[in-house]
Amino acid sequence: NIMELLTEADIAGTSFMSPALQAAYRDMISPSNPSWHVEHIRRLFAAGIQPQFMLGNLTQLETLERLIRKGVYTGPLNLNYVAI
Image 1 (tube, rainbow, N blue to C red):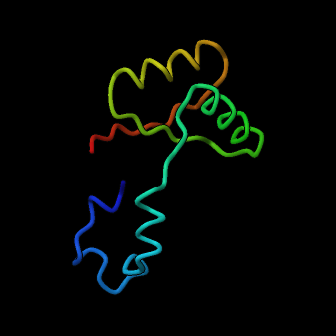
Image 2: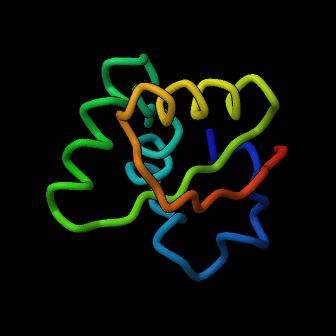
């Protein structure tokens, strides 16, 4: 929920002042089950888009490593570590 991270000063004068937009961002989710990752990587690769992985912990790196070992993703490996 990105809205929890923003203050009134952050959103002043932006489209985030809209209650409808705030509600949309507050309720926005990203699917993250394994089959979603596999399909998303396949579609990105088919479109010539290089994925960038944003990992928050070692377990997520291990998951990505398993996808690489299975040949689901063949690189290059472009990633950031994030902790929110």
